[in-house]
Image (cartoon, rainbow, N blue to C red; front, side, top):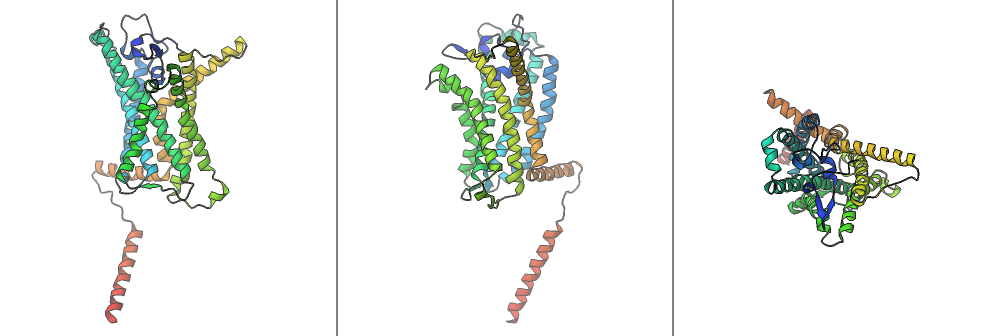
Length: 376
Protein backbone atom coordinates (compact mmCIF):
# COMPACT_ATOMS: atom_id res chain seq x y z
CA UNK A 1 0.00 0.00 0.00
CA UNK A 2 1.15 3.50 -0.78
CA UNK A 3 1.13 5.72 2.31
CA UNK A 4 2.73 8.73 0.65
CA UNK A 5 0.81 10.75 -1.86
CA UNK A 6 3.13 13.63 -2.51
CA UNK A 7 1.51 17.00 -2.98
CA UNK A 8 -0.63 17.94 0.01
CA UNK A 9 -2.60 20.44 -2.08
CA UNK A 10 -4.57 17.49 -3.40
CA UNK A 11 -5.63 16.33 0.06
CA UNK A 12 -8.50 17.19 2.35
CA UNK A 13 -7.86 18.37 5.86
CA UNK A 14 -9.83 18.55 9.09
CA UNK A 15 -8.33 20.92 11.67
CA UNK A 16 -5.07 20.95 9.64
CA UNK A 17 -4.88 17.14 9.68
CA UNK A 18 -4.46 15.60 6.22
CA UNK A 19 -7.24 13.13 5.45
CA UNK A 20 -7.26 10.50 2.70
CA UNK A 21 -10.45 9.08 1.20
CA UNK A 22 -11.48 6.56 -1.43
CA UNK A 23 -11.03 9.04 -4.28
CA UNK A 24 -7.42 9.62 -3.30
CA UNK A 25 -6.70 5.89 -3.21
CA UNK A 26 -8.32 5.47 -6.62
CA UNK A 27 -6.68 8.45 -8.29
CA UNK A 28 -3.15 8.16 -6.93
CA UNK A 29 -0.90 5.44 -8.20
CA UNK A 30 1.50 3.47 -6.01
CA UNK A 31 4.31 4.42 -8.38
CA UNK A 32 3.95 8.16 -7.80
CA UNK A 33 7.34 9.78 -8.19
CA UNK A 34 7.63 12.52 -5.57
CA UNK A 35 10.95 13.73 -6.98
CA UNK A 36 9.45 14.56 -10.38
CA UNK A 37 10.07 18.12 -11.55
CA UNK A 38 6.42 18.65 -12.42
CA UNK A 39 3.56 17.70 -10.11
CA UNK A 40 0.95 16.04 -12.35
CA UNK A 41 -2.63 17.21 -12.22
CA UNK A 42 -4.34 15.62 -9.20
CA UNK A 43 -0.91 14.12 -8.41
CA UNK A 44 -1.76 11.36 -10.90
CA UNK A 45 1.29 9.62 -12.31
CA UNK A 46 -0.07 6.52 -14.01
CA UNK A 47 1.37 5.05 -17.17
CA UNK A 48 0.02 5.93 -20.60
CA UNK A 49 -1.12 2.34 -21.03
CA UNK A 50 -3.24 2.54 -17.87
CA UNK A 51 -4.92 5.74 -19.02
CA UNK A 52 -5.57 4.31 -22.48
CA UNK A 53 -7.03 1.15 -20.91
CA UNK A 54 -9.41 3.27 -18.82
CA UNK A 55 -10.41 5.28 -21.89
CA UNK A 56 -11.17 2.14 -23.91
CA UNK A 57 -13.03 0.55 -21.00
CA UNK A 58 -15.27 3.54 -20.34
CA UNK A 59 -15.87 4.05 -24.06
CA UNK A 60 -17.55 0.63 -23.90
CA UNK A 61 -19.26 1.07 -20.52
CA UNK A 62 -20.74 4.52 -21.18
CA UNK A 63 -22.83 3.55 -24.26
CA UNK A 64 -23.94 0.38 -22.48
CA UNK A 65 -25.36 2.31 -19.52
CA UNK A 66 -26.84 5.00 -21.77
CA UNK A 67 -28.59 2.29 -23.80
CA UNK A 68 -30.07 0.69 -20.68
CA UNK A 69 -31.16 4.06 -19.32
CA UNK A 70 -32.79 4.96 -22.64
CA UNK A 71 -34.60 1.62 -22.58
CA UNK A 72 -36.20 2.18 -19.18
CA UNK A 73 -36.90 5.92 -19.37
CA UNK A 74 -40.22 5.67 -21.31
CA UNK A 75 -41.95 3.73 -18.52
CA UNK A 76 -40.75 6.29 -15.96
CA UNK A 77 -42.85 8.98 -17.63
CA UNK A 78 -46.10 7.26 -16.66
CA UNK A 79 -48.29 8.77 -13.96
CA UNK A 80 -47.88 5.71 -11.73
CA UNK A 81 -44.37 4.26 -11.51
CA UNK A 82 -42.89 1.61 -9.28
CA UNK A 83 -40.48 3.04 -6.72
CA UNK A 84 -38.14 0.16 -7.50
CA UNK A 85 -37.90 1.17 -11.15
CA UNK A 86 -37.12 4.77 -10.19
CA UNK A 87 -34.32 3.63 -7.90
CA UNK A 88 -32.83 1.29 -10.51
CA UNK A 89 -32.94 4.10 -13.08
CA UNK A 90 -31.15 6.37 -10.58
CA UNK A 91 -28.46 3.72 -10.09
CA UNK A 92 -27.94 3.47 -13.86
CA UNK A 93 -27.76 7.28 -14.06
CA UNK A 94 -25.04 7.24 -11.39
CA UNK A 95 -23.12 4.75 -13.53
CA UNK A 96 -23.39 7.13 -16.48
CA UNK A 97 -22.05 10.07 -14.43
CA UNK A 98 -19.25 7.88 -13.06
CA UNK A 99 -18.27 6.71 -16.55
CA UNK A 100 -18.25 10.25 -17.94
CA UNK A 101 -16.11 11.44 -15.02
CA UNK A 102 -13.44 8.78 -15.45
CA UNK A 103 -13.50 9.00 -19.24
CA UNK A 104 -12.81 12.74 -19.22
CA UNK A 105 -10.31 12.39 -16.37
CA UNK A 106 -8.33 9.73 -18.25
CA UNK A 107 -8.40 11.74 -21.47
CA UNK A 108 -7.38 14.93 -19.65
CA UNK A 109 -4.49 13.26 -17.85
CA UNK A 110 -3.26 11.62 -21.06
CA UNK A 111 -3.25 14.97 -22.87
CA UNK A 112 -2.08 17.22 -20.03
CA UNK A 113 0.86 15.04 -19.01
CA UNK A 114 2.21 15.48 -22.53
CA UNK A 115 1.84 19.27 -22.43
CA UNK A 116 4.66 21.17 -20.71
CA UNK A 117 2.77 24.47 -21.01
CA UNK A 118 -0.24 23.20 -19.06
CA UNK A 119 1.96 21.53 -16.45
CA UNK A 120 3.89 24.78 -16.00
CA UNK A 121 0.62 26.63 -15.27
CA UNK A 122 -0.49 23.94 -12.84
CA UNK A 123 2.78 24.24 -10.95
CA UNK A 124 2.74 28.02 -10.62
CA UNK A 125 3.14 29.15 -7.02
CA UNK A 126 -0.27 30.81 -6.47
CA UNK A 127 -2.61 30.30 -9.41
CA UNK A 128 -1.41 26.74 -9.98
CA UNK A 129 -2.04 25.69 -6.38
CA UNK A 130 -5.52 27.25 -6.40
CA UNK A 131 -6.31 25.57 -9.73
CA UNK A 132 -5.14 22.18 -8.45
CA UNK A 133 -7.25 22.53 -5.30
CA UNK A 134 -10.30 23.54 -7.34
CA UNK A 135 -9.92 20.62 -9.74
CA UNK A 136 -9.36 18.25 -6.84
CA UNK A 137 -12.50 19.44 -5.06
CA UNK A 138 -14.67 19.10 -8.16
CA UNK A 139 -13.34 15.80 -9.51
CA UNK A 140 -12.36 13.91 -6.38
CA UNK A 141 -15.01 15.06 -3.91
CA UNK A 142 -18.03 16.42 -5.77
CA UNK A 143 -17.92 13.68 -8.40
CA UNK A 144 -16.01 10.54 -7.37
CA UNK A 145 -16.66 10.53 -3.61
CA UNK A 146 -20.27 11.67 -3.85
CA UNK A 147 -21.13 9.25 -6.66
CA UNK A 148 -19.75 6.32 -4.65
CA UNK A 149 -21.83 7.45 -1.68
CA UNK A 150 -24.95 7.84 -3.82
CA UNK A 151 -24.37 4.36 -5.21
CA UNK A 152 -24.37 2.78 -1.75
CA UNK A 153 -27.41 4.83 -0.65
CA UNK A 154 -29.45 3.80 -3.71
CA UNK A 155 -28.55 0.12 -3.25
CA UNK A 156 -29.64 0.45 0.38
CA UNK A 157 -32.90 2.11 -0.74
CA UNK A 158 -33.57 -0.75 -3.18
CA UNK A 159 -33.04 -3.27 -0.39
CA UNK A 160 -35.49 -1.36 1.84
CA UNK A 161 -38.07 -1.41 -0.96
CA UNK A 162 -37.69 -5.18 -1.44
CA UNK A 163 -37.97 -5.77 2.30
CA UNK A 164 -41.08 -3.59 2.70
CA UNK A 165 -42.64 -5.36 -0.27
CA UNK A 166 -43.00 -8.43 1.96
CA UNK A 167 -45.83 -6.60 3.71
CA UNK A 168 -49.15 -6.40 1.88
CA UNK A 169 -49.80 -2.87 3.15
CA UNK A 170 -46.74 -1.47 1.35
CA UNK A 171 -47.50 0.63 -1.74
CA UNK A 172 -45.02 -0.30 -4.47
CA UNK A 173 -46.12 2.46 -6.87
CA UNK A 174 -45.60 6.18 -6.68
CA UNK A 175 -47.91 8.70 -8.38
CA UNK A 176 -47.03 12.06 -6.82
CA UNK A 177 -44.43 13.94 -8.85
CA UNK A 178 -42.87 15.37 -5.69
CA UNK A 179 -42.53 11.89 -4.20
CA UNK A 180 -40.75 10.78 -7.38
CA UNK A 181 -38.37 13.73 -7.18
CA UNK A 182 -37.81 12.98 -3.51
CA UNK A 183 -36.70 9.40 -4.27
CA UNK A 184 -34.23 10.60 -6.89
CA UNK A 185 -32.82 13.72 -5.21
CA UNK A 186 -32.51 12.59 -1.57
CA UNK A 187 -29.59 10.16 -2.20
CA UNK A 188 -27.56 12.98 -3.75
CA UNK A 189 -28.39 15.41 -0.93
CA UNK A 190 -27.55 12.79 1.70
CA UNK A 191 -24.22 12.04 0.03
CA UNK A 192 -23.34 15.74 -0.07
CA UNK A 193 -24.17 16.34 3.61
CA UNK A 194 -24.31 13.33 5.93
CA UNK A 195 -21.56 11.49 4.03
CA UNK A 196 -19.23 14.51 3.97
CA UNK A 197 -16.63 14.38 6.75
CA UNK A 198 -16.28 18.16 6.64
CA UNK A 199 -19.96 18.59 7.45
CA UNK A 200 -19.67 15.97 10.19
CA UNK A 201 -16.70 17.88 11.60
CA UNK A 202 -19.04 20.81 12.30
CA UNK A 203 -20.94 18.79 14.92
CA UNK A 204 -18.34 16.18 15.95
CA UNK A 205 -14.67 16.26 16.96
CA UNK A 206 -12.30 15.87 14.02
CA UNK A 207 -11.27 12.27 14.71
CA UNK A 208 -14.87 11.26 15.47
CA UNK A 209 -16.03 12.83 12.20
CA UNK A 210 -13.41 10.91 10.23
CA UNK A 211 -14.23 7.63 11.97
CA UNK A 212 -17.97 8.21 11.48
CA UNK A 213 -17.34 8.79 7.77
CA UNK A 214 -15.37 5.54 7.62
CA UNK A 215 -18.28 3.68 9.20
CA UNK A 216 -20.67 5.24 6.68
CA UNK A 217 -18.44 3.80 3.96
CA UNK A 218 -19.57 0.30 5.01
CA UNK A 219 -22.91 0.58 6.82
CA UNK A 220 -25.36 1.12 3.90
CA UNK A 221 -23.98 -1.82 1.91
CA UNK A 222 -23.91 -4.14 4.93
CA UNK A 223 -27.51 -3.28 5.78
CA UNK A 224 -28.48 -3.74 2.13
CA UNK A 225 -27.10 -7.29 2.09
CA UNK A 226 -29.03 -8.11 5.27
CA UNK A 227 -32.35 -6.76 3.97
CA UNK A 228 -31.97 -8.43 0.56
CA UNK A 229 -31.30 -11.78 2.23
CA UNK A 230 -34.48 -11.37 4.28
CA UNK A 231 -36.41 -10.42 1.13
CA UNK A 232 -35.22 -13.56 -0.65
CA UNK A 233 -36.14 -15.87 2.22
CA UNK A 234 -39.51 -14.71 3.62
CA UNK A 235 -41.04 -16.29 6.69
CA UNK A 236 -43.81 -18.89 6.43
CA UNK A 237 -46.48 -16.30 7.18
CA UNK A 238 -45.41 -14.35 4.09
CA UNK A 239 -44.96 -17.26 1.69
CA UNK A 240 -48.60 -17.11 0.65
CA UNK A 241 -48.34 -13.48 -0.35
CA UNK A 242 -48.84 -13.12 -4.10
CA UNK A 243 -46.46 -10.66 -5.80
CA UNK A 244 -48.19 -7.65 -7.29
CA UNK A 245 -45.82 -7.32 -10.22
CA UNK A 246 -43.83 -9.58 -12.62
CA UNK A 247 -41.80 -12.34 -11.00
CA UNK A 248 -38.60 -11.00 -12.54
CA UNK A 249 -38.92 -7.89 -10.36
CA UNK A 250 -39.83 -9.78 -7.21
CA UNK A 251 -37.32 -12.64 -7.45
CA UNK A 252 -34.67 -12.11 -10.14
CA UNK A 253 -33.97 -8.45 -9.37
CA UNK A 254 -33.38 -8.96 -5.60
CA UNK A 255 -30.96 -11.78 -6.43
CA UNK A 256 -29.06 -9.58 -8.85
CA UNK A 257 -28.98 -6.73 -6.35
CA UNK A 258 -27.79 -9.11 -3.63
CA UNK A 259 -24.80 -10.05 -5.78
CA UNK A 260 -24.12 -6.37 -6.50
CA UNK A 261 -24.38 -5.52 -2.78
CA UNK A 262 -22.00 -8.35 -1.80
CA UNK A 263 -19.39 -7.13 -4.29
CA UNK A 264 -19.97 -3.60 -3.00
CA UNK A 265 -19.31 -4.75 0.58
CA UNK A 266 -16.13 -6.52 -0.54
CA UNK A 267 -14.48 -3.54 -2.18
CA UNK A 268 -15.59 -1.12 0.53
CA UNK A 269 -14.17 -3.42 3.23
CA UNK A 270 -10.84 -3.56 1.40
CA UNK A 271 -10.73 0.24 1.16
CA UNK A 272 -11.82 0.52 4.80
CA UNK A 273 -8.72 -1.33 6.04
CA UNK A 274 -6.49 0.78 3.79
CA UNK A 275 -8.03 4.02 5.05
CA UNK A 276 -7.82 3.22 8.76
CA UNK A 277 -4.14 2.52 8.26
CA UNK A 278 -3.58 5.77 6.34
CA UNK A 279 -5.73 8.10 8.47
CA UNK A 280 -5.34 6.50 11.93
CA UNK A 281 -2.07 4.57 11.51
CA UNK A 282 -4.02 1.51 12.65
CA UNK A 283 -2.15 -1.71 11.88
CA UNK A 284 -3.44 -5.26 12.30
CA UNK A 285 -0.77 -7.60 13.65
CA UNK A 286 -0.76 -11.36 14.24
CA UNK A 287 2.13 -11.60 16.70
CA UNK A 288 4.67 -13.04 14.28
CA UNK A 289 6.67 -11.47 11.48
CA UNK A 290 5.63 -14.15 9.01
CA UNK A 291 1.97 -13.77 9.90
CA UNK A 292 2.15 -9.99 9.63
CA UNK A 293 3.78 -10.28 6.20
CA UNK A 294 1.14 -12.72 4.96
CA UNK A 295 -1.68 -10.57 6.33
CA UNK A 296 -0.26 -7.45 4.69
CA UNK A 297 0.06 -9.27 1.37
CA UNK A 298 -3.54 -10.46 1.70
CA UNK A 299 -4.84 -6.94 2.43
CA UNK A 300 -2.84 -5.53 -0.49
CA UNK A 301 -4.18 -8.23 -2.81
CA UNK A 302 -7.78 -7.59 -1.77
CA UNK A 303 -7.20 -3.87 -2.25
CA UNK A 304 -5.98 -4.42 -5.82
CA UNK A 305 -9.05 -6.57 -6.54
CA UNK A 306 -11.26 -3.91 -4.94
CA UNK A 307 -9.91 -1.21 -7.27
CA UNK A 308 -10.79 -3.45 -10.21
CA UNK A 309 -14.32 -4.05 -8.86
CA UNK A 310 -14.95 -0.31 -8.36
CA UNK A 311 -14.36 0.34 -12.05
CA UNK A 312 -15.90 -2.91 -13.29
CA UNK A 313 -19.15 -2.35 -11.35
CA UNK A 314 -20.35 0.05 -14.04
CA UNK A 315 -20.09 -2.83 -16.51
CA UNK A 316 -21.51 -5.82 -14.68
CA UNK A 317 -24.56 -4.02 -13.24
CA UNK A 318 -26.25 -3.29 -16.62
CA UNK A 319 -25.18 -6.69 -17.94
CA UNK A 320 -26.73 -8.50 -14.97
CA UNK A 321 -29.95 -6.49 -15.28
CA UNK A 322 -30.33 -7.09 -19.01
CA UNK A 323 -29.42 -10.79 -18.84
CA UNK A 324 -31.05 -12.09 -15.65
CA UNK A 325 -34.01 -9.74 -15.08
CA UNK A 326 -36.69 -10.47 -17.67
CA UNK A 327 -38.32 -7.06 -17.36
CA UNK A 328 -35.14 -5.19 -18.30
CA UNK A 329 -34.21 -7.83 -20.87
CA UNK A 330 -37.54 -7.23 -22.60
CA UNK A 331 -37.16 -3.45 -22.39
CA UNK A 332 -33.62 -3.48 -23.80
CA UNK A 333 -34.56 -5.98 -26.52
CA UNK A 334 -37.45 -3.79 -27.62
CA UNK A 335 -35.26 -0.69 -27.66
CA UNK A 336 -32.54 -2.54 -29.60
CA UNK A 337 -35.13 -3.61 -32.20
CA UNK A 338 -36.26 -0.01 -32.59
CA UNK A 339 -32.69 1.24 -33.00
CA UNK A 340 -31.78 -1.48 -35.50
CA UNK A 341 -34.98 -0.80 -37.46
CA UNK A 342 -34.18 2.91 -37.57
CA UNK A 343 -30.59 2.29 -38.72
CA UNK A 344 -31.67 -0.24 -41.34
CA UNK A 345 -34.58 1.96 -42.51
CA UNK A 346 -37.21 -0.71 -41.96
CA UNK A 347 -40.36 -0.96 -39.89
CA UNK A 348 -40.10 -2.74 -36.56
CA UNK A 349 -43.88 -3.00 -36.11
CA UNK A 350 -44.87 -6.49 -35.01
CA UNK A 351 -48.50 -7.51 -35.12
CA UNK A 352 -49.65 -9.12 -31.90
CA UNK A 353 -52.29 -11.56 -33.13
CA UNK A 354 -53.46 -12.22 -29.60
CA UNK A 355 -54.43 -8.58 -29.23
CA UNK A 356 -56.02 -8.51 -32.67
CA UNK A 357 -58.05 -11.62 -31.87
CA UNK A 358 -59.20 -10.12 -28.58
CA UNK A 359 -60.25 -6.93 -30.36
CA UNK A 360 -62.26 -8.99 -32.83
CA UNK A 361 -63.97 -10.91 -30.04
CA UNK A 362 -64.86 -7.73 -28.17
CA UNK A 363 -66.14 -6.09 -31.34
CA UNK A 364 -68.28 -9.15 -32.11
CA UNK A 365 -69.71 -9.18 -28.59
CA UNK A 366 -70.52 -5.48 -28.80
CA UNK A 367 -72.24 -6.04 -32.14
CA UNK A 368 -74.35 -8.88 -30.72
CA UNK A 369 -75.38 -6.79 -27.70
CA UNK A 370 -76.43 -3.99 -30.02
CA UNK A 371 -78.50 -6.39 -32.10
CA UNK A 372 -80.17 -7.88 -29.02
CA UNK A 373 -81.06 -4.42 -27.74
CA UNK A 374 -82.51 -3.46 -31.12
CA UNK A 375 -84.65 -6.63 -31.16
CA UNK A 376 -86.08 -5.93 -27.71
